[in-house]
Length: 119
Image (cartoon, rainbow, N blue to C red):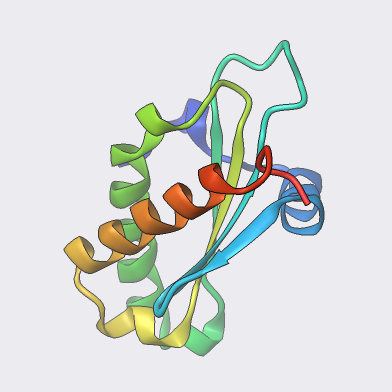
């Protein structure tokens, strides 16, 4: 489970991360990341977007639980104040947790390799 201090809860944070951050698409997820601009932030924030296109409520909750678990494993790779939004694609309802973790790590590697993490 992703601890509460690492969860993105404000819609303005979601919007800013998606609009200003860089994007890396994978087969089952799309990852938007925004490098820290707030020097006072002490923890990275991770947000999830799991829409109805993923499936029924049961499937969406299952995908959300898997993504929260996967996101917890990559917190060490994020800097303080970094913001990450993970958007689940419809195929994520059939994906295993291991596959989602591989895709998240690959997306973060691509994002860290981009020019400063910003567009």
